[in-house]
Image (tube, rainbow, N blue to C red; front, side, top):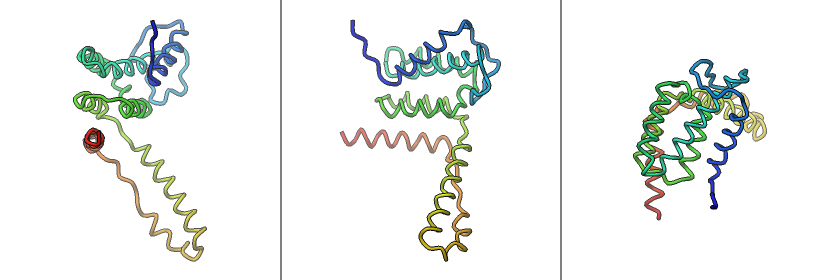
Length: 181
């Protein structure tokens, strides 16, 4: 029997192998850290187990047969560990999975609603920092005389979109791709 796994599933498998190497297999709601830094042993393994379960349920949403049980499993995980659904890295990995596979519209909406509490402030702060440094470097190399007026150019800032705006863009982008086929 030949089993073919997609790249996201291989990452989940690698995560599960790393978590199975630990002696502790129980999951508790204590010690969830959004970054995961500074954690070791059972607490880090617990985070990996929760992440693995979320990714497993997300990939199972592709199947119309397993969709209902996956939805209820994800809702249970969100009730027990709400901090897991505020992890920006997990959300970006799930967005990558959504971009690679053809999820139904209802599944996409459900996933977006799960991450409704997610804040993007650190992403926008980093983007503002990068744009400011690139703009500053560009003005210095192109025209050194303009360097005095760069302070007016740096008065911009990126505003974080609301989660419904993001979901609307993602859903409209998906429908555009379907029309092209």
